[in-house]
Amino acid sequence: MARAHDAGIDFRGVAKRVAFFVIVLVLSVVAFAALPGVGEVRDEFSQAEPGWIVAAGLFRILSMLGFVRALWSAFDRVMPWRRALVLGLAEQGANVLLPAGGAGGPAYGAYVLTRLGVPADLAAQRHAALFLVTSAVSFAAITVAGTLTAIGLLPGDAALVMTLLPAAAIAVVFVLAVLFGRTNPPHEPSAGKIRRLVWRVWNFVHGGVRTSIDLLSHGDPLLLFGSITYFAFDVASLACMFQAFGGGAPELGLFVLAYALGHAGALLPTPGGVGGTEGGLIGMFVAYGTSLPLAAAAVVGYRVFQLGLPALFGAVALVRIQRVLAHPPPREVVAARFEAHDWH
Image (cartoon, rainbow, N blue to C red; front, side, top):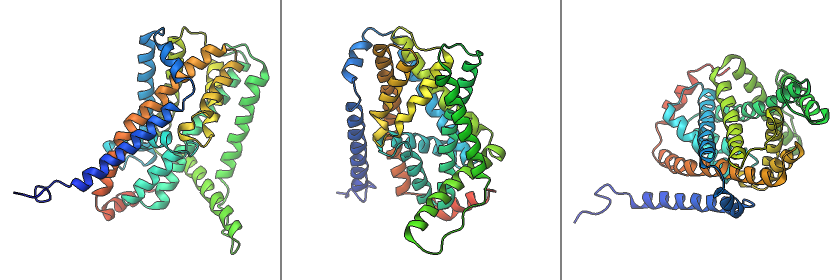
């Protein structure tokens, strides 16, 4: 009788993959259970319009694909699209499951690419740039929406402190970031653990900002397209959830402001920003004129999709990546493919 090994079945490898998947699944369930008001949302869904709920889910999937498009562009489309798709979904799943204030996905993606043979500095800098560019779209939206609402080109009735002040503050941050990225990199200190630690952080951030500027100026133009669709389709997903519960959301300019400012709660170091994101979004929508019950129902319903879909697709992608890492392509081939491009 042939043994399992002779038959080509690696039971140990299969068991490891199954165990990894179970761990990811358990973490996903824990993240969902921690959402405030999940039971109330389930009750509200019986009265919500299902068409808008389906639309919210579809827009969320399109948003995820926008991130994948941005990731592929950030690496100049050197990796195959299928690999970019798997890695992009895995990174978004890691953002839900890892308590890193939204940086868990980029950190995981850089780790995977380094394991596959991509130069470590390149993997880290490009992921830092991707994180900064996608975040910059949200900041730009605050500036545009706040300014256009304040001068009356977008409808919305709010005090200037709620529209023009955030727009002006973010504009100043943008200018300072560009000036910072165009300065010379700092010199490495000769001694001192704290000084060297500060230098490493400063140098990494500086490199990320400079790489972001270079990518937007000379890289794949679809990087910006992917980043914008990542943002815009997620905004549309939340808007659909408001419609599912009867409408009553703020007008466009104020809606974008509430969305972008409310997501600052995601910086809370919990898996998927659970707790902080919900509180930030609900608080901002109430501040911009939405009733508390509507804001709570719409935000929690939206978060079920925002967390659930990346966790679902990401769990599958994480298992797939584990298989790729177990049988990686030759490292010298991967390194040569990336080093053959002009990364400057």
